[in-house]
Every structure is written in structure tokens, then in C-alpha cells.
Amino acid sequence: MNQTTRLVLHGGAGAAASDDGRSSAHLSGLGGRCQAMLESGVAALDVVEYAVAEMEASGLYVAGRGSRPNRDGDFEMDASIMDGATRRAGAVAGARSVFSPVGVARRVMQDTLHVLLAGAGADRFAHDLGLRTIGSPAEYFVALPAADEGGSPHGTVGAVALDRSGALAAATSTGGAMGKLAGRIGDSALIGAGTWADDAVAVSCTGVGEYFIRVAAAHEVAARVRLAHVPLGQAVDEVLAMIAADGGAGGIIAVSARGEAVARWNTPAMKHYIAEMANGCM
Image 1 (cartoon, rainbow, N blue to C red):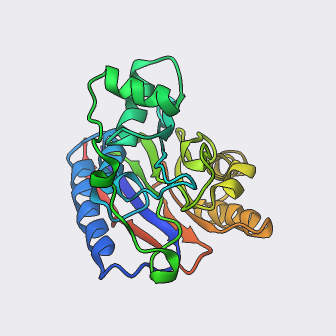
Image 2: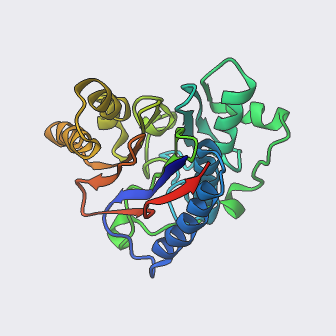
């Protein structure tokens, strides 16, 4: 049978970043590789992990190497991943020494009975598994332009995918807001707020995390599709309207089991990539 594959990536919603087109070119190239993976039969869960890990490692977004320091000058990273077919999920919050937060989140999902590990526990978990960690923060993290220098105040990254088997998956990663309080955790580490995937919808969010947490944004999109049977685009628009009414801003990407793919935002811009619809034979 033929099964549609769909893919959407985001690199953060906020001001339009002045990066000489590097992130746009990176997203385009990465999106093409990920779409080819889906068309060749790679599972959605593997594709979203790969996509987010590549964005973390690039230093072009506020995630992984591009993370922002908190008020104390330290770096704390959050990430989560969810498999729609099983609703298994993994996440890390406030990690300081892991190279790929989303990769560690995947191992939390696979290798533990937990969903979320935080702080030193997340770092120790990665170390005990022999996962790659960073050395000197000064040598690892890349200084990105501040918002008043043409950069984006939000640069969370995320990926959602529908694979040839009909399975959905989502992943999100962030280095947080510049100058955040030490220990602050946003929506990116929270299943149902910044990330969600089930058998109908996969969702990843970006923006001011507190507002997305308050409305359980990612799950709210899925609930509207599953329970109210509204089109995916309408569900995303309604949730963004809820966030805006509360004073928040950001963006949402989502794909559905029906093959819908959406990228919407209520900020001046959102870095994103939507793959053209493609079919694979099974």
C-alpha cells in the first residue's frame, strides 16, 4: 500500500534572525535529508531525533551548542521526544553537560521507567551510559546574536514526522531564554506542553514556554483534532489564539495521521521547513 510521509521542522519563533541565511539553508538541507529518510522507510521517531540532534549540534539555534546562559552565567538545556504509536516519551531538563539533550531524552524513554530526568541526574544518567558529553562550556557553546542585534529571542528547535507505517513522532529541544532564573524549566521538556505525539497528531512548540505550559499547548492541539474532529490547521490556530489572549507568543508545528502538515506562528517570524508530500510503497 502507499503511505504518505510528512515532515515539519522548526528552528524557533520570534524576531527574524540576521544570520546571513545560514539557518534557512541548514533547515532546507536537513529537511531534505530527513524527508529522504522517511521515504526510505526510516521510522518517524528516529527521524525526529536525528533532525533535532543535528540542529542542536549546529550552533545556529538556541538549543544545544547555541544555548543561552541563565542569570548566573550557566547553561541549562531541556529536550523531549515522544513516540505516537506507543505514547512512550522521554525528557531531560536543566542538563548542563550532555552533548545532545534530545539523544539523552530518547535513552530516558528507552532505558528507564521514567519520563523526565532533571539537572545533575540527567547529566549523570548520560555519563553512566557513556553518551557524549561536553568539555569546557566556553569551548562548546556558540555565542548567538542577542535580540537587539538582529538575533531571535527564541530559538527552540523541533521536528514532527509521519512515516510510511503511519506512525507519528515529535521532538523538541531548547537552551532556554537569555537571562532566565537558574533552574527555570520551559515547555520543551514537558510532555503535553511543548511536545506531544499520539496515533492522530504530532506537535512541537516554540516561544515563551510559560504560556504554552499554561494551556498544555501541544496536547491541546491533539485533543481538538481527536475529540472535536477539527482540521489540524484550525486546531493550531485556536491554540495560538489562546496563548495570544493570555499575552504569549510563539509558534507550533504539527502533522497528522491524515497527512496534514502545519507551521503557524504569532511572532514576526518562525524558522521552519515543511517537506512536500511524498509517497512510499509498502
